[in-house]
Image (tube, rainbow over all chains, first blue to last red; front, side, top):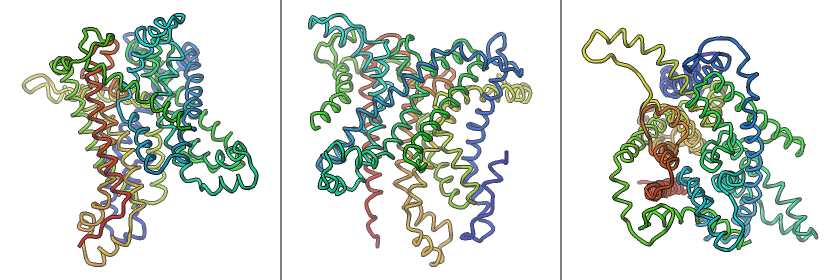
Length: 300
Length: 276
């Protein structure tokens, strides 16, 4: 690995011919380089090393070279299967719910209302995530909707600590993140195309399938990737709304690092999570690339 | 369609409204609502643990946002001046910092810092044990949270500021150089004013991210408590009216910050008025 500082001190471009500028460039990049090395690359290398080690008797890490931690990953299979079913489900739900709203905002809403409505979508995303999730403990918990239903004479229903509660939390938490990119791509769409399609005799459904949907694909892809990536590392929603019954890999990681202090195994789980996430993203992009016959899909 | 949008907005805001409403609960338990009193507000702010957590969070968010903004802006400027290959290496690092789940960043930072302290602390002990008082030792605390928060907020600032740089008019910088301004003077009088809205919004976003972060701090905070950690453990202990009060106050504050950030971004989009 070439050191970042050496990279930063690389020759300046032809535009800035003076000698001193390379020193300035190096100084400009020095703090970021240090941070990336010490707090990104070094930690990632350390957990990679740890994942091949053994748990010390008192917890923590003891050097070794073994694949035992990785071979033991099936012990936490439930966390992985939960994450790998609920994260994609949550992403799809967000997508299905966000799309009509984004469409309404971009195509139907008047321009004055639009700014306000758009701001109203973003605002919850910037208020505390923890608190917004907590609100649903309130609503789904014993004295919330279940109490209302009992009052209305409906059968008793347990909502909290179910996959349903986790999915509600996911949709609530991540909807704004999905609406925004879809809105941006629909906003850029030339409205005359929709008229042209209708003039040429296409049904509204046909116009949507053949014009609107393909043209909004970039936003759809960005939104679903953002939500999916964040969901794969989710901890708070299952911790608060899943109540130990519906748990994600994130919850297993907290348990392994902070409670049972099995660092090597926890490191292997963390690496497993990142690898699975990268594979899922690559598969998704590859599938999309095939579908569209070209792979010009970018992340942001 | 309209109805659908209205339903979604109801879905988005009803829970928030509920929390704000319950913060004015006059009842004893957090569950039953009796209108209306602000009695929980002073009671909440008399909680020393809460105040300590709040102060820690403000310190962490201010420091992390400051470091992230200064270093991130420096890096964004520096990246304009390096070869494409070096720029690509940094791009990869920035994306890695953004894409890796926060929980993994938290874990990795915890493990790496513990390993680092394992090496550094015996050395420090050997060096400082001769003096008076207990030997100097490094540990988890404000510093480790600030450092970890700076990492991912810095990546964010770099992205925002670079977007602004690429939209900047280079001819002004060239004109300034042609008029014999020194590079530093050009930076101060031409580049910086143009970058300022992006820098400011980067700062506010970093502050909000850091202030709101639970999972990274949960791993690297060690003995200290931040506000989200305090709220999380309160929730774990059971629903109390205090949480509603804290939630209402925190939401008001982050809303204010958001509005400021939005104003700054909007000013950035508008063409700059010519100055005499």
